[in-house]
Image (cartoon, rainbow, N blue to C red; front, top):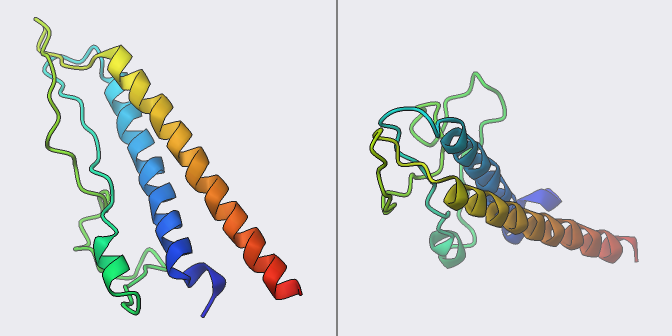
Length: 132
């Protein structure tokens, strides 16, 4: 088993991918701040309950763009949209609030940095253990 397939490292990697995808969605919100009738979007956090309950479960991985994906193959984001957003609509029909979006962007960046640090430290611990 490759080191990167260790369940905790896999979950950290998934979380980093989620933060990257969320950054893209938040950037779209900011870019469309003046688009009439645009509603901001966000992603629901990944749920690791199933992975924690069954640690031996294997999932399909696309290693080549020509492979059929195990997530339905729609080509879009593999993370669920957050449908619980509440927003205030301006007279022009747009609901993007710059302050809220920038707070989400900053929070997302801090969370990504924390997860990336945990991932790096975990790999360093494994490397130290292997070297001994």
